[in-house]
Image 1 (spheres, chains in turn orange, cyan):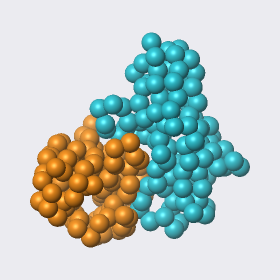
Image 2: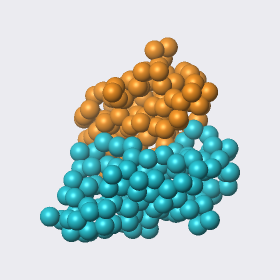
Image 3: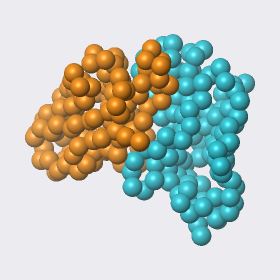
Image 4: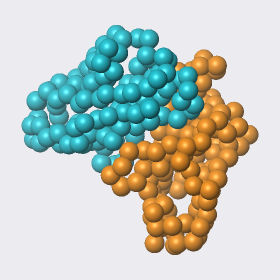
Length: 116
Length: 116
């Protein structure tokens, strides 16, 4: 079965640079979520989109922005990168109950970002 | 408050032993979902199970079983006859549906070591 696709899988950036992470949800999933997992930490919710509109916002820094496009893929843009942004970034997708789905979030493999 | 507590930081067992991972949750929502995810050393988050707040039926899937008890706000996970491949970090997660928006709240995770 198709899973959530994230690219790139690994990314190395310098401080103050920008990074763009991409997420392609499971086909027919209408909701996308972004999470950040620091070393030895649990995943922390950043932001979500339902039908291309921002649906919820968590602890996402102002330096980060995200959007969901007409084909339902999503991008997380990170600017003025800091050392503390080094983490594993997960994208997850789900199908809402309004669409007959179960709302279970299925996670992609993650993008490992290292800021030097 | 909405939170998930996994009191066991690390558990170490010998292969073929049974092991139970504890999860206690806290939410003011009357409707919510509970999840367990597995994170092996490779880093991906693998969905294991989802439980609705209105369905207290316990579930068994092969060597895995889950005990959901609303009276004690617990959703414990038991692995029977553990195997080395079960070694991973296991996260219990809560998604409140009335006031919680779209976010999923993760516990801190329990790292399970299964020794041969």
